[in-house]
Image (cartoon, rainbow, N blue to C red; front, top):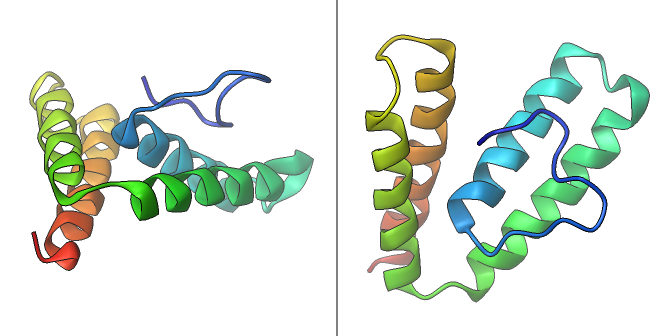
Length: 102
């Protein structure tokens, strides 16, 4: 699901919602740790991967990613930390979809 530091070396994901989750988790980790231990660099790399995926995505891809993120959110206990993190991904993708004007 959502990890703190991004994907393991060599691991990739084609899923926009996974990339969004990794980016947001990496930003949280960098913020919580004061950018120590390479967390800032991991956040930058996750951000770049997310930006590339969003830039290449069609409107329908963004809609599908948003709905997939909503399903992940629905599968968690409302009010939990995991739910809040899933909601952040869902809302981010909702905004990306709406911003695209699709």
